[in-house]
Image 1 (cartoon, helix red, strand yellow):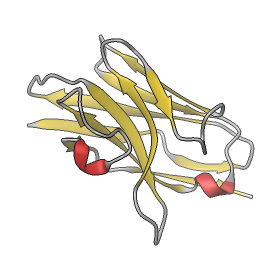
Image 2 (cartoon, one colour):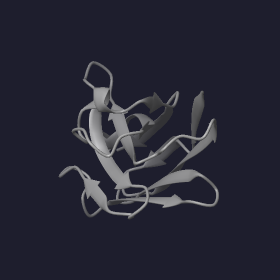
Image 3 (tube, helix red, strand yellow):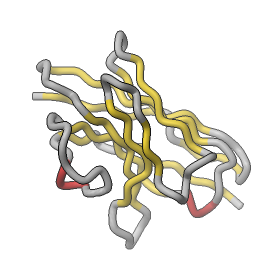
Length: 125
């Protein structure tokens, strides 16, 4: 089994920054894609950013492009999300996800195989 554990969430004022981490452990699997999703109360889980693990190619939703940066540390098996210029509408539970296949629709949660438990991010206005 693969475990993903997020950390780094918290309460921050609008305009502030947070850095989320997602540590991967457990059995080895071909991790082609990792991503961050978020889910606000009463809303569907939405795509935030994805990174192709080997090549380091990144993709972002329009809502976060230019403010968030996804990155990974191969040696530490850790995924990061640097969030700057945070807005109240960024408030949500943030989840990391991993896909064992290079294929699939990056914005579709069902195309990821493993999920973390989530970390709360709250941005106060």
